[in-house]
Length: 567
Image (cartoon, rainbow, N blue to C red):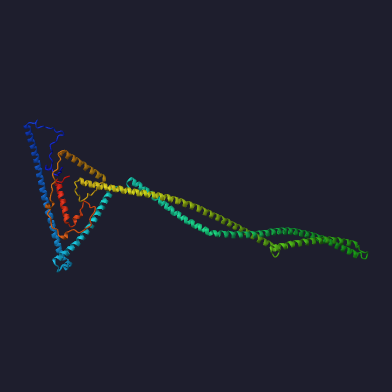
């Protein structure tokens, strides 16, 4: 069936008479001659009407073809004029180039026309190649610009990244992982610092390990030596104390005995004095009496003799006591001599001072002993404490290292899984994005086809979203289906027929023009996946084939506009 764009009646099909499904067979024997004549008249009238309609349709087609031919002739003349104008401009440019380019004039001075034409054709050929190269570069840049604009529009129309739920969840998961990785990195650095500190402490302890043992042994030897000296001094002190006690006792006894002896001597001396005085008095009296009685009679000799014997007896006891005391004094002197020798002093008067010195030295040695014992105990405690710290640090370091390695392995596995999930999510996003872009491009192409194949030179300022494109395509498809149904109802299923396609001789419609060799296209890179919206080949110098293709496009467009294209 034929479609038309105008509201005129030409091109509309006339419905054929409907055929009955079960036509009745009418025998000529049963039909009268008058009825047959009437039937023939009806058929003839119907055929005449049908032929009339066809003649009207053909006349309308002829008028349309003539109009199209006139339009094509007008456009061809216009294009021919444009081509002639372009050729004139080129000739003028050549003349101007020869006038303005000194190198051209020098190169062509004194040359024959054939050489000049060939030389200029070479120059034009070179310029054409440069022009083609520049046009290709311009086309590539425009395509990139168009792709960038489409991408920007797609990005502007697409939802902002991170607004979708799964994107927010992915971002949250990524941030959580980043925080965990950063936390583990800080822990790892802290563990490395602690590990280095532990190593330094261990090295210091190992270096000082050889120093503590000799120091302790030296301190123990000194302590043992001082202990032995202190024991000797204690022994000397004890002996001196014993000697001192004995000497004090002996001195006290000696002083007591001396005092008693003095008292006794005093008493004896007093008694002896009294006795002597008495004896002297008696002797004086006796002498006096003797002198008095010398003349009278002799003195009595026996009384004086008896008093002298008693005195001699008392004097012997005193001498014996003195001898005993001398023996005791000699024993005391021997003990004092031994004490002086043991105390190593010149005499007994230095013993108290030496005793004080020994006590002071004993106190100093005891204090030094206590200090060294405290130092030894402190060093032992410090060694034990350092060994405990070393053991604790080694244990905690090994434990922390094991925990860190396990957590690091777990985090690495988790990170690997999450990276795989992220890569899979990115691939999925990219896949769905490509699908969305393909769907949008398909919807745009579908909308352009539904609009009648019209080429839009400019895109709308605000691009439509996918949902809006789907709604628009659905509305257009629904409208197209309704139009087709309406046309089918108007035309009818059994009244479809097709007129023979009108063939046009393109060579008659478009007059061929001789193209000079210098305008023949040279080999240029073919463009792939060119957009239908912009034809950058029109910017280049047209060739014979380009002109033919363009003429065919013009003819096809004219047919479609006039409703002569078969669908």
